[in-house]
Image (tube, rainbow, N blue to C red):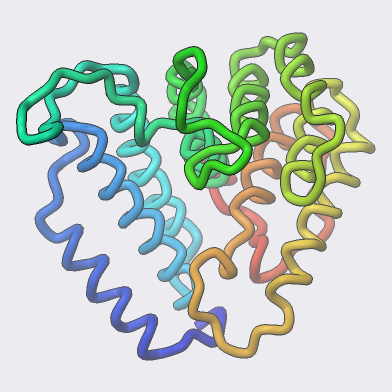
Length: 260
């Protein structure tokens, strides 16, 4: 056991996730976004839970890779025509609902964190939105404009389009909190500034530790692994040959996805 988990919470969650995945459709058998997104989430959550329970990093990375494969499948439906029941009758709509930039950002970071860079690059091609998308707004619970610019900047980084990536970040000059932390990481990568990258990575993870270090018992998956830091560690390894991770801890384990 790597972390002190709430036993009732952990046992219930484990039984639920394993039950959901027992008869889950294969990645090439899913029929739409919703099914793919749910299965991707189950694999991700199980990977985090098994990490906390003490399973080896390769098993955890494999679960994350499987989650990433389902995320890619979900995003392959982005913008496709589907039939929905609206007002009691069937209507044909274009579905963007589950492939918004906020979801894309999380999916890209998970793929990068487990070393599935080829999935991240493929997924990046599906990161786009129609003009004036109603689900992107300052007060949206789905996706904020800041999330959109971050996702687009990461998409451009993975596509090798550094200039347009920097243009996205220029729209986040006044960002604060988690948005600012990701902005600094992406800016350092897009400008190939090693010193700024290591500094931004350290600041980001220190803020994560401030949130979780006071916990005696864990019952929230988001407090178990700093997936964002792990994603940027693997990006740093690619972009900076001299990069060496000098600090590692239970929330940011050295080696996750390293051999992929």
